[in-house]
Amino acid sequence: MKQLMTGILLFMIGCTTTQRKMEETTPQNTARVSIMTFNVENLFDIDDDPEKLDEAFLPSGAKSGEVFQNKCRYQALRYRDSKHQGRENMDETGLATFRTDECLGKDWSPAIVRRKYERITDVLKQVNNGRGPDVLLLQEVENRKVVERWNNEYLQGMGYRSLIHMESLDERGIDVAILSRLESVGEPKLHNLDYSLEAGIDEDDKRPTRGILEGRFKLPDGTPIAVFALHLPSQGASTLHRSAGLKTLKNVAAKVEPGTVVVAGGDLNITSTEEFKQRYYKDLVADQFVVSHRIGCLGCPGSTYFGRDNTWSFFDVLLFAKPLIDEQSPWQVDPASIHLVNSSRYQVDNWGKPAKFRTGKGSVGVSDHWPMYAEIFARKTGNTAGVE
Image (spheres, rainbow, N blue to C red):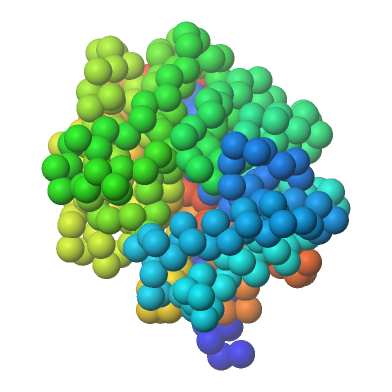
């Protein structure tokens, strides 16, 4: 109980401090656009996609037969052969027990899916006076259909008119997407990770994964903005995979036309231990971007938590092209606006950590990630409105 109360007190202090800083330093008489990245943790439909490993996310009534059993065993084998081997419990045949248990035991029913939608909606409504962010970067969505359903059935009246999604190569079927109130312009692009940027990656380890989704929009004053949504390879892959992903991002962002605002974000899967050793946030991206938790959210512990080694990490970040911190630039990032979105009653477990959705049957649980939020603003304008 003492640990729980301490965690709650820290969150209250952090929220109060963030709000006070925003009130003291937020520029007035400016057009503002809010941006948030949110790993929604396995937003799947209930339909089987024969080309993806989505067997865990089916109703229990559909989980029968030898073909299905073999697919679940295949998932466990894939996990066993990854870098996760040795970290999780294995059964007597060497299969990752949690993978087989999830695949065979989870009941991904219509009622559970509705609960999932309701809870991620509750998270979204914490910001912008209940309207959600103007630009939302999503990770772990199965397909375009699940985002369309969320927008049409649960986000009515919130004004999201642009949805960008492109099917990735990820074998589980988890993709990235962008929802926005901003006007979408041009055709979206999906940039696959360029593993040739890291010579140390073995050919056998160059598995297909999520690409970097690029969307183009217009800011309220007509300024173009390029938004990149990404979900880098997990800790099951080597650190070189995430390095290659960041280098791919830098390459594609460097090709954006001058005069365009550039923002990127997502789940980068970089642990605090890895960052300490590799300095990805501090060094690798520093020549092009500033990182959300390095210029704001300074009292935040991290956006995700690893119980096995009792560490917090910033997996979920927003990256702002360096001109956005130039006081002479037309558009700038507001460091005081940067914070974790974690006040929903579903988001925090009894130990003050992000509450996983798991089976969806608990009274709390929505995602094992807390979203990161920030605002950018136009420097000289009399327009005090945000995006309509």
